[in-house]
Image 1 (cartoon, rainbow, N blue to C red):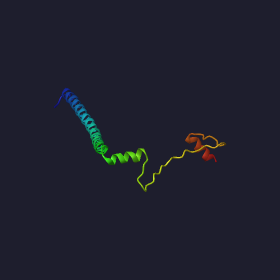
Image 2 (image 1 turned 90 degrees about the horizontal axis):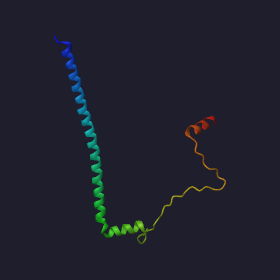
Image 3 (image 1 turned 90 degrees about the vertical axis):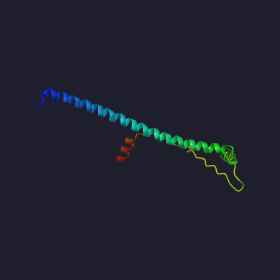
Image 4 (image 1 turned 45 degrees about the vertical axis):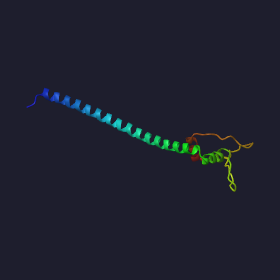
Length: 114
């Protein structure tokens, strides 16, 4: 039969082994998480590099000059029209009361008590 001392030593060794295994698993999990983040960032940077190469190829071309003129100078080809959409700001007229911002719970109690 086993002595209590042998069982205690085996129990301590099992606990140390379990702790070491858990530490290795945690390190693996952290490394896998970091790898997925790095892979996503690499994909993002590769797509950005492709876009930069495409715009660099367009820089010297006549198409790039036309696109710049159309966007920056708002030029149009013969027969085309340039439409500019302007967002209209709400106008406050005299006599309008300023809007009060009430917390949601006050609006709810007012609504329920009406």
